[in-house]
Image 1: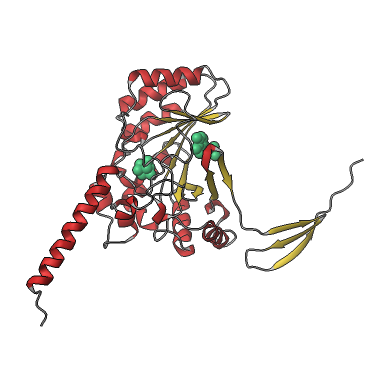
Image 2: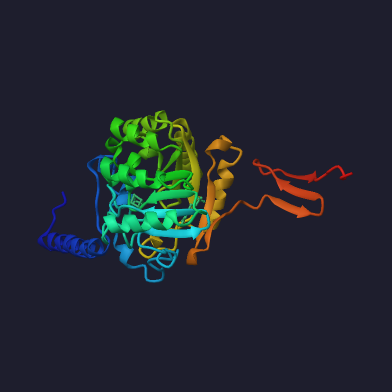
Length: 344
Ligand SMILES: *Cc1c(COP(=O)(O)O)cnc(C)c1O
Ligand code: SF4
């Protein structure tokens, strides 16, 4: 028989108290929020869902990284807008999300600041887009844009559609994963009046593919919305070939096309999630050729200083004049002659 002695109990109590004090420090800096739906996906403490949403004291131990490595603040010509590439902008329309992911690249903003966008901020941002005819693609982001109610969303989308040079509207949202009940028939009917409208969602693990999230994606796809997915490569969550294969093929079956696999940004408070780029490349190598090409995302590094995203690939080609030394998906090494007919 084992008895917990008074000393052990005190020690345990103190340890628990210390944990609570420590976690309070974390959550004061980086708020915690969890939808009932997402919390119910946790099967055991420390699993892939738990790690994504439960606070961890390591968030405060990360002193080397920067809160805004992508320099979004300096790329912001007016509040709430990020203009990095010539033809597309990101509009930050909400700073709330159903779940505050511990690895979030906008950790400095979510659950804080003064969003959702006020009337003036929105008017200024729309004005900026209207006065820049080179902008063809507007990406609603945040936070989660679908945290806005239908009326607010409709107002923003109507404002964008009134600008003739805005061809494409994209919404970046994790709501199908974290709060699928928000994808209602009304919302789908609203969104489909603003086509061409794309949605990029954000699944990170096969356990997030449930009856509910599948139904949410089906409703959006049935509304004619092309669906893409962005996954963040997370240590201890999805950094294995098996997990990624099952995630990417699972998404494809939901009519969601894997778009990007993101190398973790150098955002302060997220270092414990970061894998090496080498590990990411090995995962891509384990996907390419082994599963449907449609299910293979681009692996991208979003460079510090706002230099943009660069897609990186496993080193499978070496070019020597017109001779290419290639590596196949099974690891076989072959040469290929780059023969072209001379031009007349
Ligand atoms: C990622 C991103 C985009 C969109 O890039 P795509 O490669 O077209 O998906 C646009 N603006 C900013 C600031 C971004 O970070
Ligand atoms: S849903 Fe997206 S924006 Fe919101 S906390 Fe998660 S990663 Fe960040």
